[in-house]
Length: 230
Ligand code: URA
Image (cartoon, rainbow, N blue to C red; front, side):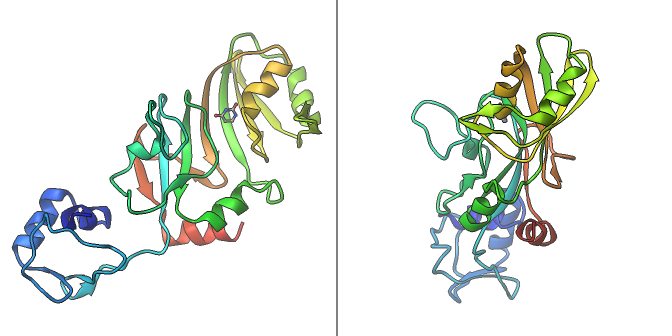
């Protein structure tokens, strides 16, 4: 991948800013300062140093995306835009979304290269909390709160108790501790409701606070460690 892209992806500023760093001879590749922005490097093999500090190749990457509508939760597709299209070109990494949000669902989506962590976070054993805001097509009945708690039969099993908080006539907060395919929509459907709008506001302790739709950020060390200890 291009040197300027690599540095930009690793937090050294915009492409314009890293070009300036390179021009000022503050960047070396394998000991040589004779470098250009469009030099191609192998992030896994080449030693890149900026101001005497080695740009460490991270073992794993962790991003939090505020997913907009219209993107599928997949790594590639011939016809549709995927959530990876919203990140810079990290094609040299094997990033993937942790679980799935439907194409029309917005909100918190974790994207990582860490298969072990993803496996844990998605495992029904760990009961990671996921919170959604759903807008439905009919006035919400209070009795649904008890029904969601009881669970329904889905794919042959009783779902775990789910929380339902009615926000207003057509909007509710749904709290799940598992992640079956289309779980929120299918649960409402079971009770005769159609979900018109769905947004995930929380995945465990992670929220999209501060991120506009389509924006992403890297997780902090602290957040990564916290996720690993869930
Ligand atoms: N449940 C759904 O029905 N859709 C989503 O995108 C996430 C949870």
